[in-house]
Image (tube, rainbow, N blue to C red; front, side, top):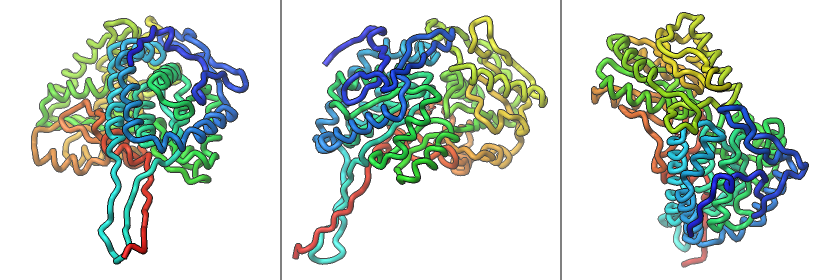
Amino acid sequence: MSKTYALSDLIRADNFIDGQWVPAASGKRFAVTDPATGERIVEVADSGPADARAATDAAARAFPAWRDALPKERAAVLHRWHDLMIENADELGRLISLEQGKPLAEGRGEVLYGASYVAWFAAEATRVYGDIIPNQQRGKRMTAVKEPVGIVAAITPWNFPLAMIARKIAPALAVGCTVVGKPAEDTPLTALALVLLAHEAGVPAGVLNLITASRENAVPAVADWLADSRVHKITFTGSTAVGKYLARESAGTLKKLSLELGGNAPFIVFDDADLDAAATGLMAAKFRNGGQTCVCPNRVYVQSGVYEKFADLLTTRVAALKVAPATDAAAQIGPMINARAIDKIGQHVDDAVSRGARVLTGGRRLTELGPNYYAPTVLADATKQMQLSCEETFGPVAPLFRFDTEDEAIGAANDTPFGLASYFYSQDVRRIDRVARRLEAGIVGINEGALASEAAPFGGVKESGYGREGSKYGLDDYLSIKYLCQGGLE
Ligand code: SIN
């Protein structure tokens, strides 16, 4: 199957429920805007509880047949969906850049990244094994089989509008779950385009349903799923505050949860590190998507002996970054997502400066480019009293903290309720082993800044959440284990 779409044909404005494009029951709409200019791209459905319920009804009707499809039949549909994503990678990438502000090359890169999860889980669909349990009593046979959990509600963030929803939907569909989804209000268009391609790939009506909602109406819409006992699982990527709300509110129907929440990633550069490699790793990890990634380093700890040298090396590279509209082919940093985001970045930098941080480069809004641009920034002399040491800045700001001993660096790195990613650079093999074990995080980058892979388990510890996405472990969150005990076999 091969079909390529023009960008205008990928842009959909209605909900997708039971295989049909339908407006919100209320008829309401809200505007999706280009973060580079603040201009409206299109108005999409502003859904409420009635739309959420209609999506669940469709998912419930579709579940038995999808559950009972052969794994290789589900895999074939996922492979077709993957192929359509690849064929449409340029236009999907452009759509991501348009609504989210990621530079074009990163937008296309996100399509390939998201599609890699679909291919991965298409293959995993055929490998969901159970166990025959060694006999404990004569005349009995004990087996464990894995079954889809049922209807999954997927709630996804704006920073990776394609990859985050793909890596939730793909494992769910692979094992036979049906899905109701809601993308972030800032970036619903890419998710709607993905659903269009999924339909084209042969995902049956009702198996995948997507509704969009404004910030105000998202809460009542999602609340309908939280209270509905037919929805068995919530998978969410976003803030820790919202993750806690979902956990609390879904307790009434005891849903299975996967929560990929906020981070406050430390990045440690030891005296014995290859400084050039560390600067390269930090550039990749910190400035990807303009710093708007849960695994972006938020606190950079540099050992005293190399502090000034590393600061110089980094500053030269950061000052050379090209900031421009995402659709400009030369852009390395695009606009931030919205006014709230840019205000928070400005507030973190101002707070740090008022408490003694030195601006080595950047440190200001680039209003000459548009409403949502911030200059890539390096701050020296950061301290733990600053707001940016305990909250995710989610922007292109690298604050450099100084430390003297390994214990001090690990203590500072772990001194946070969060535990998603952490990074360190060292060339001492014994230190590498020690530090990797002691860092409290679900993901540790060792002499490496680019960690993401469909083959790796992605997820956090502490208040960064639970559950894993990607890898052979990524199916577990969508499966339940059933124990079968057969007697009378003697
Ligand atoms: C995220 O920001 O949550 C995901 C980033 C990634 O997949 O690397």
